[in-house]
Amino acid sequence: MHQSFLSRALLLALPVIAGCRDAGRSTGSTPAPPAAEFVLAAGDSAFWVTSDSAGIRSRGAPLELARYGGRFFELYVVDDDHSFQGADLIGQTVYRRDLRTGDSVIVFTDSLVQKIAGEYAREHPDEQPLDPGEQPDEDPELRATATLDLGTAHGPFVSYSLHTDVEREREPLWHSSRRGVLDLRTGRAATLADVAGPQAAEVEKSARAMGAPAHHPFDPRSFAITTVDGSPAIAYALPGSGEGDDGHLVPLTPVRISEPIWWRDVATSLPTTFAEGSREVWRHNGYAVVVRYDSTGDATLALRDSTSREWKVGRVSGPATRIYWLDRPALDGATRHALARAFSEAAGYGADSRVATLGGKRKVFLASRLR
Image (cartoon, rainbow, N blue to C red):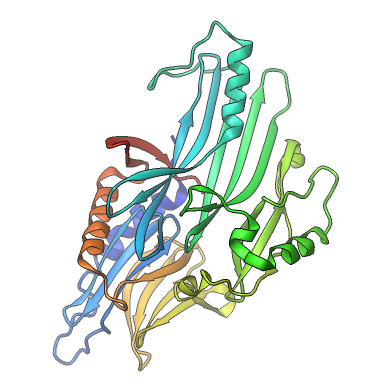
């Protein structure tokens, strides 16, 4: 099981940010920080910040959050083990967990490794899939490993990039790479029409016009949602399969789209970027949240009031991608309780484990944090 760099960065950042729990406390001549409450998504972590006349309080946890329809959801990736004694086969599954109910739903399962496992089973009828906890041979004749990288959640949509490496005895290393977008509402792959609406045909036409190399044919499903100058855009990438560079993505120039209806809620969560990406600012309800990056890629988080006075909150793992505002509109009691429970559980289980409730049964998974 792997632990991502950003998860390790979170462990380093937490003591610093926790040490700032009382930053900005009013002491007579020292002004109080602005009243604020929000969750900042940074890297594969979330930082919950509350500020009032008593000071600034903050907590961080290795959570990948999405919010739509007024509800919070956690997203996490789980290794999907299809191994045999002679084959090390690890796919990926993405879960969406409703923080209020605790119920988990599968929104994506890697089909390529499943297919490879089926082929291996037919070629080796005397072998049985390994039980949980069993390990394949140290030097198996076949190894297939998928790595799924979740991107930024944009309302009900989350983009992903999937890369698979396949190693066989006496054969060159083979790769497969593609992009995609998941619709968290339906638990299925989102089409371009789902994301861009009536603009879909024109967007696809523009992307196709950029051309495609022979070994990287255009796939209308291989796209992600991104932003260009703060506006929504579609970022196609030509999928790859084969040896060497043939198995890697070929990204195309993003195509800007007019703001769809679902983007209205997303726009308020996105920052304005300054100084060639070294500083990002979110403005909300009479105050601003400022993130400044250093040469390591980590960042300093601060609050700024209407007079441009700042209060340092602490350091976070970067990049910071979005903010979920909790003060306007005010967070209801049930959601606050669910969010607090999710932060506590994530801190307790650590970066590499999650609890899923499926069919009324709770199960602890080892969750991949590969970025």
